[in-house]
Image 1 (tube, rainbow, N blue to C red):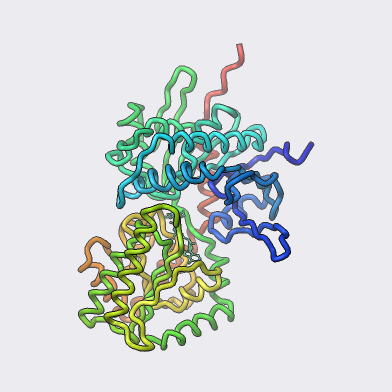
Image 2: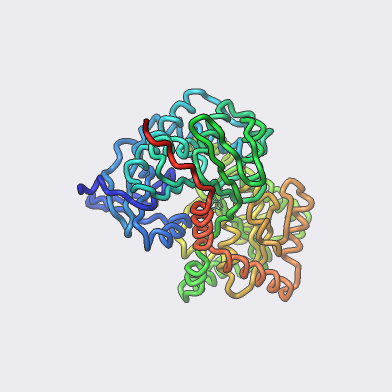
Length: 479
Ligand code: ADQ
């Protein structure tokens, strides 16, 4: 069998492959596993199975030939420069992303973008159909690939199809704005099982099927009944998590601990180090957080060098206009606060627009007395879970927005509504002032939760739900 004709029992499809292309100084090309949580989760699932991963390699133009990496068969999907603009930056990130995140910024609707979205989704579906063995399990990820389940189903009625939504699923009142709402729901209903971050997301999906498609629903299942296709699709919550053991071990390494100490020293050993770590995205509530902190500075409740606030803002979607505007706004605000409240050698806000290696992230978490997670809407927020995981010393305090998926699991956080600036300020002050003994108790409980519900358990639960989803009727015999 030629290598490109191999077939696999488990096929994962996500917008991106789990590797990044690296070109060395002498021009040699190699692939490096990307450090994300999804890769870690899938590694543990794929280790003992014959698995393939279908995704874009990250650069426009021709796709590389399929290849094997770390025991996984990788099947790249090509995207042209135009498709990157219209399917990815356009429809995925400028139409779906705002609608799925409460329209914090307005969504753009362009018919041509959806045409490209459909075309690219079909290319993914064909690649999946090509590498899936008979009766394989197909696991599709996220909002960029919502038409894929239906398309795979048409091409390969023998496989079992699951889809996981990493972001919120919007209330029907918002979802209904989408001119392509029917196509999206029908695409998703091609799956046997749909997994969401929160119960409310799964319910929003079920309600949209009932109200917009007129389908019958019962509890967490939707009945699809067409002449050629009659079955039930289940939609439920399976909240994603992180690799607790792996990250905790990294935080405990002497090199990470030494780096955490060094970070604190270089910031002048503050009494309280406050930290924010987010992709520079308007959903993350970075502006609200900076406004609240600015007022605390103005009221002299916090002051450098006693309190220091470090904001890491990871570069993100820099070709989309709303992200360019956000960057200008945030950087303007940080500049204003520093101009007003910094002293020589003691900046009020340290702002870093960079990506960092895992160890540096773990060291930052270990160094921070308070982590500020204040999104206006967030599917889960892994940063919150990473923070409590790194705090094997049971130190630190988490300020957490009630509009994150993580809020539904980390009940011992200092909970805030980021729209309520006064409440946000109080939440920050409580996190600073609560006695250490009480904070340790809270941190211990949150760590227990993440340790018990790690990413391996998430992946196993998703696959169990998919395996036990309602049976499909056997395909009709050809006449
Ligand atoms: P994101 O919106 O990207 O994910 P999040 O869940 O916080 O948000 O994950 C970000 C990841 O990037 C974390 O692992 C974090 O450590 C890492 N990261 C952030 N800044 C970094 C930096 N400067 N350098 C290096 N690493 C950095 C989407 C959804 C979320 C959902 C996840 C997973 O929007 O709601 O939790 O998918 O399902």
